[in-house]
Image 1 (spheres, rainbow, N blue to C red):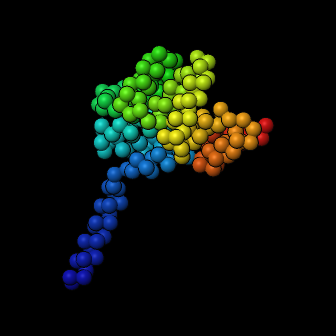
Image 2: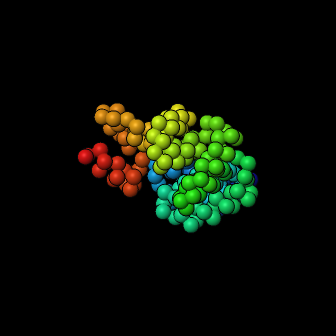
Image 3: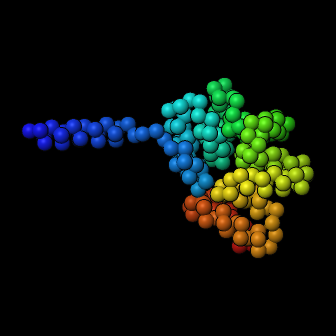
Length: 200
């Protein structure tokens, strides 16, 4: 009878665990983001925010995933929520910068990215954001410096690898593209575009 009770208790615990999975890992969400599985990444980051409404890294990841998934309106709403709930972090300021950039507000985006770097001088998303701003205003030397800094800060992120690749030539350029390609989901739009670029 005691054994039967143990089995029933274990079954009830397993059923409860299945119904209430543990907290979403930000590492798991980041893996989906880096693989360019943006819908899955957005879902995981959203769950992380449900568990902790002040999780700044989740807001950054969610905004980035939504922008990449062509869901800009949702990204704007998420960045506003992040600013309201967790403003004093590099991740939140970077998320706001990405949203501002997507809206075409380069000056506002630059302010957010610079604010993020005052909080964390090595925050890869903010470094990449400023590189993009400088590239848009034809300050290519500064863009290269910031892209290289972003890559040093986050060398396993396909986005920092690809941004750095844009400053390379010949075999080095192709090698960097192939490095990013190896990290991405083979079925993703990013991979199709990269393969077309490499084949040229």
